Image 1 (cartoon, rainbow, N blue to C red):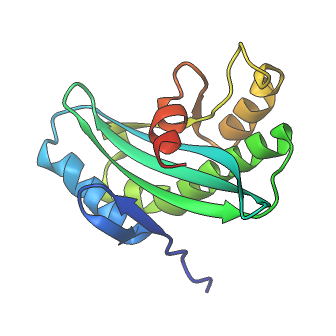
Image 2 (cartoon, rainbow, N blue to C red):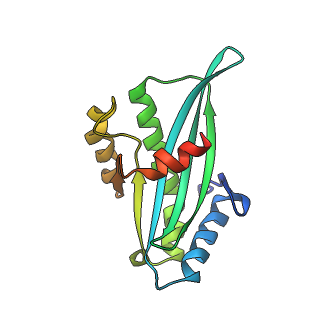
Image 3 (cartoon, rainbow, N blue to C red):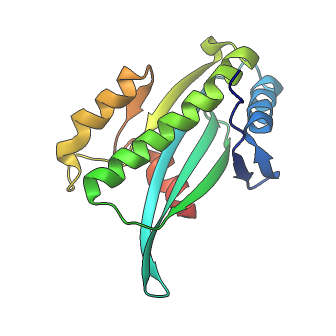
Length: 167
């Protein structure tokens, strides 16, 4: 039997948590006010930089549970890679990282919270105005083909705002 992944996320309110504990905290947040509508959003952004003369890139994935009209809480994790990819590879990596986190946590969420209580979205940091516009159909197809709803700019705030804040 394959061992479940146990990534560490950071919550601004509770600190470091492993992914199973994050799922429990999200379920508790939903159960605190069960009559509200919720949106669970996952998005990844990246930031390239040079450190000590070497190029590196930080990928930050955010998991946000939004109590619609009444606030939210979020978790994030950072993964550093030494090689800076070209734009197309960077966008694919961001999208695949979001999908990987979704595939890790969604089974636990579905067991803890009835899917009718929340919408699940993957936010992708691509938009119709910038250099990523030609990739929209490709990455949205990847997300939809994986069984998730995709959002792009300007609706992809989990990637372009929440994850970007920690990149």
